Length: 50
Figure: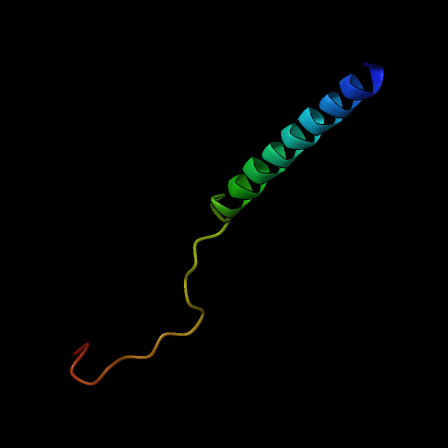
C-alpha cells in the first residue's frame, strides 16, 4: 500500500509541476516588453511629406 501511495503522490506532484511550468511559460510569452517596438530608422515614401 505504501508503494501505491508513493506512486500516486509522485504522479500527482509531477502533474502539478508540469501544469505550473506550462502556465509559467504562457505568462512569459504574453508578457509585454519594457520598450515599445519602434524602428530606429524610417524612410519616407514618395509623395509623403512636403
